[in-house]
Image (cartoon, rainbow, N blue to C red; front, side, top):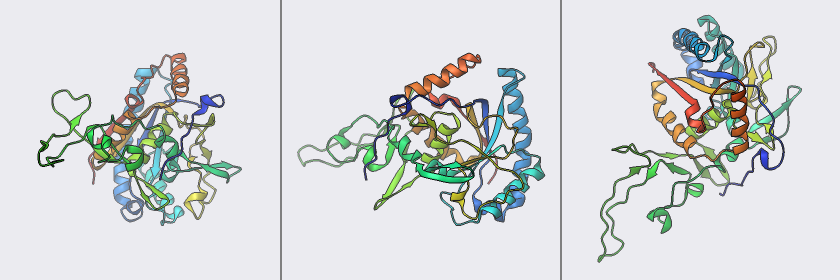
Amino acid sequence: MRLPTYREASEESSIAPLPMAHLSIEIGHFSLEEILDETERVRSEFRGVVPLVHAFTERARVEFGPEARVSTCYLLDDYFQPGFEPAKVLDRLLDAAGDAGLQIDYLARESGCHEAPVFAGGVAVGDPIPVAEMVAARLVAQPEDEETATGGRPPTSESGWLCNGRRERTGRSRSAMHPEQYRPPQEYGRREHSIFLDVELWHDRGEARRWSCPFLAAVWQLLRLGMLRYHGAAVMEPQQWSAEREWPGRWKDLPPVVRLNPYAEPFTAYRTLSMLPKRYLPIEHAVRVMLDHLALDDDVAAHVAALGAAEQVTVPPKVVERVGHLLLDGT
């Protein structure tokens, strides 16, 4: 299965501006099953997050001034766990957050990092935006080595695997007269020793493509950083959701991003911070590798940098430098 090629906004139309917060804080992550079956643990971990949100909000004010804009968000795992009833999950999650005194400004669906339906008047309209395919088309694969050059290993666009260096070469012989010596893997940009990572981005099941958790998490970071456009337009625009409104019976009928707090600062931000349990360390390592291998639209990057400059905010040229993590104790 070959990915289509997507051209970014500047090649066809102007770039739609997005409102920018200074900092977007992701406040934990639980499986939908954990939310339903371990609600007290979720509530307890949310209580521990509250002072951290306050601390990083104050830190943002020290850096950006007393009017620093900070928003909070939570990503729901409906892509890998679509069978759970939305109302039960969302009510449990928001009740736990409310009991802990934690304000969630935005809720997002992980399946929206795969395909984002466009909502108007509270209903999906037209075809969904192929967000994951857009990002995959902008991956810059590792330089060709002996394995890919000889056909021993397909390129990233075909294999769905991406690494942060040169893969190992085994001691197998191409011929009895010319045995090959073992060559260990080697990280690009290493200092003295290598930390080599080879991550699966997707796998194909016939015509269907199943995206990996790290890949969707990388898309999630790009969305929060305001780095994606589709024919010039925003990929996701948060939809206001009132407390009186009933949750839909299906996940796909819920907008990809909903705004719970009508007074929230913008969803997109110059920087992101993800507060996650320590078990997500391997996934977030993979996210950073992927972000380092993306050729994002230059005009979108320049647009965000210009917005930052107008507010005396330095926007690093490498998108991965705008992403922060805080790994927390927890199961």
